[in-house]
Amino acid sequence: MPTTNSPRAVASLSPTGQPKPTQSFYEAVGGEATFKRLTDVFYEHVAEDEIMRPMYPEEDLAPAARRLKMFLEQYWGGPRTYSEERGHPRLRMRHAPYVIGERERDAWLRCMRAAMDEVALPEEYDQAMWEYMVRAADFMRNA
Ligand code: HEM
Image 1 (cartoon, rainbow, N blue to C red):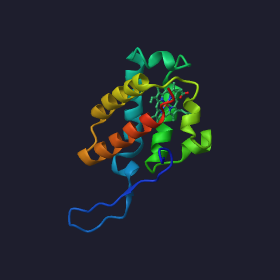
Image 2: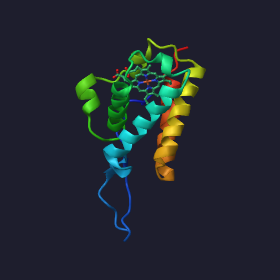
Image 3: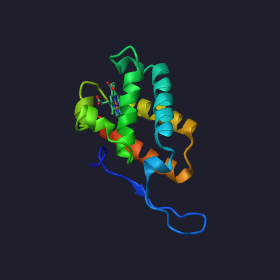
């Protein structure tokens, strides 16, 4: 299932009704600043979550926040820094060391919902991103 590498583009109309050149989802939602805020807030919630926090091997969550940011930017049509630095995402494989059951999936999604609420994308973008997050989190289950 395409949880890691589908480029997204959205068509939109200018106020005069003329089609604008196709813009990536990444650009349409505000580019780097939006993804930085989303992943920073996500990890603030992870740091406070009793299910999530113990799963992280590193003391400092900033490097993990950066990896998630780069991954999501790439997925939504932004820079491809994630693959340049980390290679193919292979996210299921990278999550294999962690036991991810329903409980962990739901905890991850709670942190992500809180982060998305804070970033508050326009409705249709919020919906598209949330549907992806739910699908991707379920895909990561291994227990
Ligand atoms: C479903 C529950 C999930 C749990 C409990 C979980 C937990 C973790 C943990 C403990 C790490 C290691 C920290 C690190 O080195 O970065 C990690 C890494 C990562 N996770 Fe998750 N994760 C989940 C779902 C997801 C989802 C849905 C995505 C993407 C939409 C995602 C994207 C990533 C990325 C990009 C990394 C870094 C991979 C790398 O090493 O390059 N995770 N996750």
